[in-house]
Length: 265
Image (cartoon, rainbow, N blue to C red; front, side):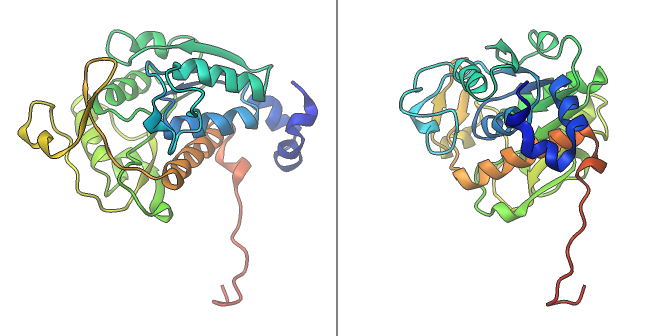
């Protein structure tokens, strides 16, 4: 890969760490607002091999927050748009494209092979749980983003083990399902501690009538939830940084807070 392209990163982390990133193999599932932003930073950081997974196409409602969504890309598959963007940023990055919906039939292919890290940026409960369980039970390092929609305050975005997160309805639902399947600690997540009122229900529940709905390409009912580009971008960047930390080790990114003259600490 071109040394000059990653000069600023090597000046900060060292050339050895950049070379390690070039050799890493990452699976990123979900190319929406969070996943797309996460992908952007991983490619710009020099990750050398990425498998991207998403069954969906770009819609006009994605433009408010998704980095892959423009008027020119509406109607295109997200994996195709993502692959073109990856190659535009780093032509030497190896890209494997899987335009798949995540379920019990496809998850083995998604996490198959020699993988250093699985990144979950799925916004649907059951596919998210299927992916996390598959990676966890196979001993593959996996990190995840919890719910970014409905949040207004990016300063409340946090990092924690899934089993210790709080305030996020999606995280609570995921924890419940995964615990029943024998999944415990060891999955770090990005989540918001902002209080929101939302309950994950089955599509046939009457309460679904309270939400605007759309039918996805898979025929699933999905709620149209409000979201801000500032908040989803923070989720994506923090997820990317968590990925880099997992790939290279937390000691690589260890810092110390500067002296605060206002507090004397």
